[in-house]
Image (cartoon, rainbow, N blue to C red; front, side, top):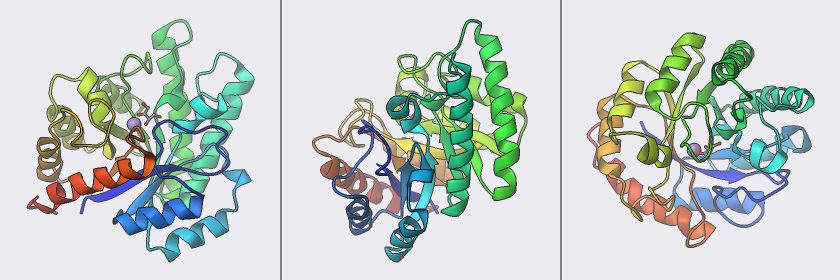
Amino acid sequence: MIRLALAIQTPEVPKSVPVALLQGSFEEKLQKAAALGYNGVEIISTNPAELDQQALKAQIQALGLEVSAIASGGMGFAAGLTLLNPDPDIAALAYRRLLALIDFAHFLEAEVVTIGTFRGRAVGDKSASLQKLGELLQAACQVAAPKGVRLALEPLNRFEGDLLHTVAETLAFIEQVGHPALGLLIDTFHVNIEEASYTQPYQQALAAGRLFYAHLGDNNRRPPGQGLIDFKAILTTLCEGGYQGWLSAELLPLPDPDQAARLTIEYIRPLLGALSCN
Ligand code: LER
Ligand code: MN
């Protein structure tokens, strides 16, 4: 079954992440997600060691929610940490935090850790940077896989990254790294900028058995239905391709963080309900 989640940030993240949803304390966010009918939450964290993880897990479970993924989207933006950072001390700290996110995912029984902007930008030669990124992700996958955690690498549009924009090139990179715990996160917002089809990238990733996770946001990064993207076509492709993972709202908090969460589920639930596979 395809399940719905939304991205929320934990209290230790030092800044408001622009694509995190819901207002209030962390517990209030969880309550709102459950009340809106979401199946799970994608947790944006930058330093899980600062959290009372046991209490957080109890709150999540008490509400009947699951954790769809642990997201690294706050690392670069809010904590200044990127895996390819030109400062070796910062890059080393970023890698240690990636391992902490993997442990956090394991603790919360989340199957995925996302890698989007957290990879950072190329330092000098792009192929050398990709080589370095491949080595880091290979090493992280070796830690993650025995814990039942997988890494989902996200193609990013050209304005937010300079490495791996399309699904085809990200898939080729993933195949080259060659670890079964490394796969794709496809975000409709980036697809809309970089791809030539709304559906073919999903078909390609599914056919390769590498679609681990999906982000939802319209072309203007507002909630689905507030822009131009053909979500019915994308959901039909996912369904027909046998996708059994999460769809997670990661989008601008417009018109406000709570309404964006409500508008997303009000639009996507009926589309999902009409699918023969769900
Ligand atoms: C950023 O635009 C994004 O889509 C996040 O998932 C990246 O970390
Ligand atoms: Mn995304």
